[in-house]
Structure formats: structure tokens, C-alpha cells
Image (cartoon, rainbow, N blue to C red; front, side, top):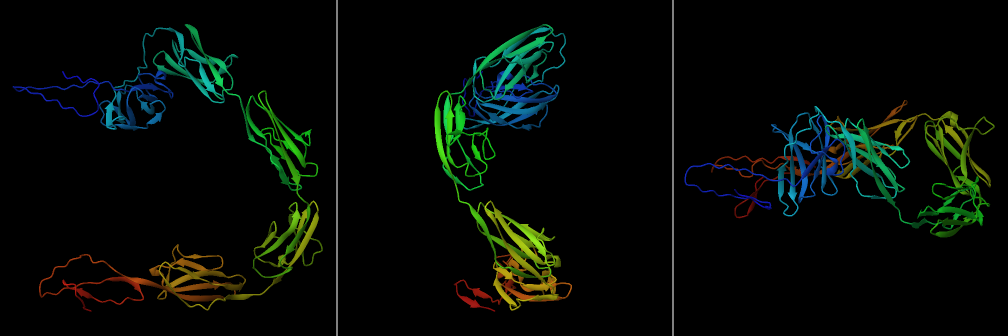
Amino acid sequence: VLRLSEPSAGEYTISVRCRNKTSATLYKRYELPLRFGFSTKTPRSINETSTQPMPGRPNKILIDASQSKMKLEAIHLQVTNEVEKKVLELKENPSDLYLTEAFVGSDQEFRLWIKGYDLDTLKEIVVSSQSFVPQQVAVMDTTWIKPESQILDTEVKTIEFGFNATFACKVTGYPAPEVSWVNEEGETLPSETTLLEVPSLYISYVTIENVTTNSTIYCKSKNSEGDDSQSINFNVHRPYTFEVLQTPEDQTIEYGGEGKLFCQVSAYPVAETKWYHNDTIVTSSDEIQVDLETNALWIKNMTLNTFGEYKCELKNEVNEKTFTAFVNISGIEAPQVAVDTTNVVLKLGEWSYLECRIIKGKPSPMITWTFRSEDGYEFASLPDGVIADDGKLKIATAQPNHKGVYRCEASNVEGHHSADITVQLQCIIDPPTITNGDQHTLTVKEEDDVVLPCKVDASPPATVRWEMSQDDVIISLDDRHRTDHRYTHRFKALWKDSGNYHCIAENSIGRAEKTITVNVLVAPYIEAPKEKTVLARTGGNLVLTCNVLFGNPVPSTKWEFIATDSSTKILL
């Protein structure tokens, strides 16, 4: 018998000698330095699990590697008498705990294959667990048991202020006990209880959110045989603090504007915040308000009544601090506006922007636009097809009902000021004309940016498109070709882009066309020969091909012979 005590990772060889023919049987026995536990709930430790899975439902599988020097990387599940191994998702938790999940069928015996490496030697380790057999649900002649409860968190627990705390309680009892968690006030807390081991072991979880006070909770269980109760105390840790996060700062606020003064503290016990304006405590009004959530002072409407000194007082049983800031008011100014032109003549269908600029005004003036038609007497709302955007007015497509006077009026608390723009309509009907027709030929190189302008005048507006032809054949333009709203055509030149480019403008009156010939200069490109070495008989004929794939202008070709002595000769 060969026994290895505390063997290190590696390969071992056993040599056996014998005089006559014999046979040897090798057995290996080892204890896997991992612990496995099963539960239908997510366990936090091996104490919250069972050694056997629950059949017919998903099981959380906890692997405890705290007693080994292994780093786990992958886990597989292999059902007994099956070759296939199912890959399971492995999640690492603190304290060398790993968690995965698998569905376990009834009477489905299986083992777990673990892949990882030794933390000392970094060598790969692949091991399997013992076989796991699901719990047997059908249990006969079960003894009735009075409930016994055990809270797994045995020591007094200290919880940081505002954090959540989860507690677990194991309960043994048959028939199935009713398990509940109760606080000091006798209130039942929300909890979850599940069967851990058939037929009589249960586990119950309770989570207390946002813990703020010391307390005691009870795990209570009851069935027809009796009841039991266990308790656990927990304390809340919260140190005294008085950390000033924000203080008010001097500032100037425009008349009619708004602003905020901030005074914020993180304190325990909670600090009280008071605001004073010119030594008078602040109460909420239409002009000033204190935000109850942030304790910020909100000046909602800056007037002569709201400027001056503001004081913030922070106070609790431990500390007290006071901060001051001065809020001033900026000047007030009546509005003044100006326009670039007072008369605009538009063609039918033409678009235009009318701009009204604010020259001055405090607080910032509000701009409104009104309209008076040619035969009207009063200014009213804007006609259809005209859109106002603060200081700008957009006429998308000029129509006869757009003729008239447009008034831009600015107003603030100090007064009003306005400026007028008269719009006239020139009703001219013209066929399309292309006015920048001087350029007829354009020579570029590959990768150059090509810009082909096409300025079109027409009334009514024309429909404009670009076409490209090679040898009188129209060629479809790919996605590289773009035409902007001014009908300028752009693309990055490639070898295949030489040809005639046609700008075509059409309306109901007529048609215009401009053609620009684009010549793309392309360096010659010779196709590489399929064979680098050619064998030929002495005195025989030899044909060598030189395939020029493309080039613009058309490339000239020649053959050059380089002898073994490096001399050269032009052949053709």
C-alpha cells in the first residue's frame, strides 16, 4: 500500500517488479478540500444549505473553498451514466465562496466537475465531487416533532446606520411549522421560508431595510406539537458628525430673476437649519422660499425687497455654526431692438429669415411677433406658413398672403420697443437657370475631395438632381456621393469616378442642365503574375503577359530584361 500524506500537486510514478506474471489494481482515495451545499434560496454560508439538493426545482449550489488553496474558474454538472457535462455559470463571492445554479430532476444522481488552479503553484486542477443524490420527497412514518428554532447569526450584530440587514433561522419540525419574524412592537416582518431538507428542516430569511435604531427581532415557529421562539439583538453604529457640505456665497441676481443660496450639513444628531434676511427669520412668500428637502434658500423673484444680507444658522446638540452672504441686485434697463432691413422683397416660393436683434434690456426682454396685412389696420397673429422663433421669423415658402408688415416687439418691466419689417412679393415666373456655368472640366487625383457647385434660379422653385454618365451610359451614384441643400455635389474621388456629371434643374416652366467633365488621375496598376518563375526550353518560344488593370491617363508600357550580370536591356 502506498499512502501519500499531504501530497503536493504534480505527477507521481509507481514502479512494481515481480518474478512471474501477475496483475495490479490501482485505487485512489482522496478528500476534496471543498464543501458543497444546496438550497432553493440564495445562501450566504454553508450553514444555510443542505448536503443534498431538492428535486424537481432549481437549486442554488454553494461551494466553500475557504479550506483549500484553490481558485475556481469553471464548474460542470454530469449526470450519472451520461457522457455530456453541462456548463454552469460560476459566480465568486467574498470569503472564498462560489455560487452557481442548476435544475435537479427527481432521482437524478450527478456529480460536479471543478476546474481551477493551485494558488501556490498556479498549476491547473480538475477534480470531481462525490455523487449527489436528490432528497427523497416521499417519506413514510414520519415522527411528529415540536418545532425547534435556531438563528444562525448567534452573536449580537452591529449594523451601519442606513444599511440593510438579513437574518436566517433554521427550524426543525413536523408537520410543517408556521414560521414568522416579529419585532419588539409585535409587528410581523416580511420574510421567506422554504423547505431545506425533507421532511422537517426549514430555513427562513428576513431582511430589515434602512436600519436606523437598535432592536431585537424574534424567529417564531409553531405547529400542532408546540411552538418555539429565538431572538437576536442588533445594534446600529452611527458616530456623531457635523460636516458642512455647502455654505452660502455672495452673488448678484438680475431684477426679476431667481437664485439659490445653499447651506447644507451632514450631521448626527440631525441639525436644524434656519435662514435670516437682514436679521429677520425667513418665512415662505411669493418672492422667497426655503426648500424643506435641501434647506436651500430660493429667491424666486429678485426685487428691491429681496436684496441684502442672508444668514444661515446650523445647530444640533453637538455643534453650532453660522454663515452669511450678501445678495445684490443688478441694474434695470428698458429694451431696444433693431432689424437689418425694413423692406424685404421675396419671390414666390422663396424662403427667408427675418431677424430682430435685442440691443439692450434688463431683465432680458421677451420678443413677440405680430403681422398686419397690406389691406389691414390692426396687428394680429402671424399668417399660416410663418414660424416665429424668439428673435427670428422664418418664411418657409413665400406666398401672396405673406405680404404685409411684421412687427418685432420687445418688452420687460421697464417698457416696450418695436421695429417693423415690410415684406413684398415679386411674382415672377422663370424657367430654371444655372448661373455658375463657367467650369466645364475638372481634373483631380484619387482620394481628392471633389466639389461640383450648381446654383439654380427658378420661379417656381425647381427640382434639382445630379446624374453621372460614361460613354453616354448613365451610371448609378453610390453612397459616397452627397448633394446638399444648395445642390452642391460632393464626393471623394476614386479611379472609377471619371465621367460627365450633369446638374439637371426642372420646374413647370422649363429645364436647365449643366455638365462638368471630371477626370480622375490614377497611377498605373499592374496585376501581379501568377508565377514568379517560368521554365522554358532553349530555342523555344515564351509568352510573358503584362496586365495593366487600370491607370488614367492610359499608361504606356515597356519590357525590360535584367541579365544575370545585372545589365539591363529594353526589349519593347
